[in-house]
Amino acid sequence: MDINQATAEDLQKAEGVGPALAQRICDLREERGGFRFLEELTDVPGIGEKRFEALSALFYCPTPVP
Image (cartoon, rainbow, N blue to C red; front, side):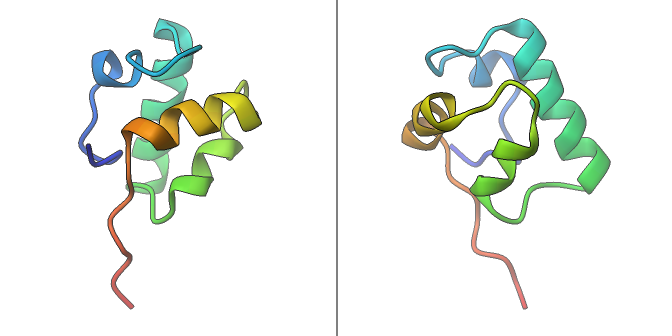
C-alpha cells in the first residue's frame, strides 16, 4: 500500500506500530505534504531499524517525480 494513502489504522498493521506512533507518522506526512522516500519514516520518533523493516514490508513510496 502507498504510504501516502495509508490511514492510521492501516499503519497499525505493521508490527510494533500502535495508535500513537501511527498518528506521529500521519502528522509528519501531513507536515511534509507527503513522503517522497520510504526512508523518511526513520525521521519519526520511535521508528528504528526494526519498525522500519516492518513498515517497509507492508508499504511503499511512489517514485518521486523529478
